[in-house]
Image (cartoon, rainbow, N blue to C red):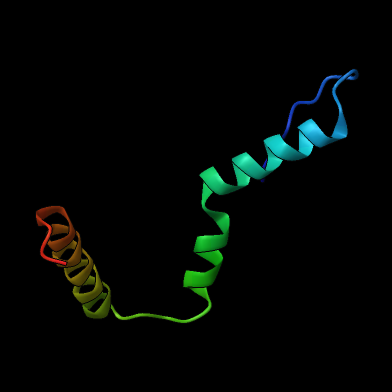
Length: 63
């Protein structure tokens, strides 16, 4: 649960902005999307390896 400390004189827009930042940092939306469907550990590992290979290619300039 996200808790935002807001002062009495603080604008509601600023409080919303703080909430949105905390929400993104907590990665709640990503977790919810991952929990919608089960992925096998072997598939997760394969995807991580493919991402790592892609990042290495980007860094080396081959892509």
